[in-house]
Image (cartoon, rainbow over all chains, first blue to last red; front, side, top):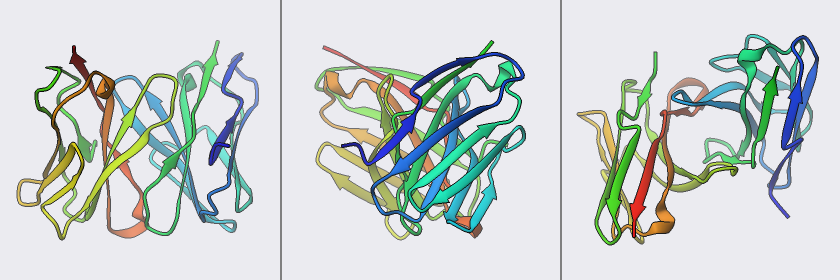
Length: 111
Length: 112
């Protein structure tokens, strides 16, 4: 079984819809992250959480919100999706100060 | 501003030769550096790391070099194999928050 899972793997939605992307991990890591990947822009940090009660904005948090439901679960929400949020979204986990391990990604298309 | 830069979007190398991927950073507080490999439709996979107390780290065919004065790191793959064809990202962290900042990636093609 994969250590970091993401659901859904692919999603097409319309402008204005609310979308939630979910991430679960079995690595026992405290830290969880959400990144998006765009062509030519690499991976950019959206939000990160160092434990269940700690949520922090990353480089590009506008238009997104997150929830850390448990140590193992970290979800990303787009309250009102817009086309420029079309991207690959990756969840990652790490222990304190350690190397992030990534999930397989969610391809989101907003039409 | 991009704090971690990979100025070569793509690189082609013959099988068996050396691949050299480069990465520059601007933040002098960065003290931990990573390289990831990414295949299409998969998440990035950790490859090798280096901390600022070292200038070289080796793992099999992969070696990372760090030049702190130049704020530059490079990944050497020797010998290159067709299965190494992927996008390679460098990443850096350090200072407050310990966020990881990623470069834009270099697409490596190893030609058989």
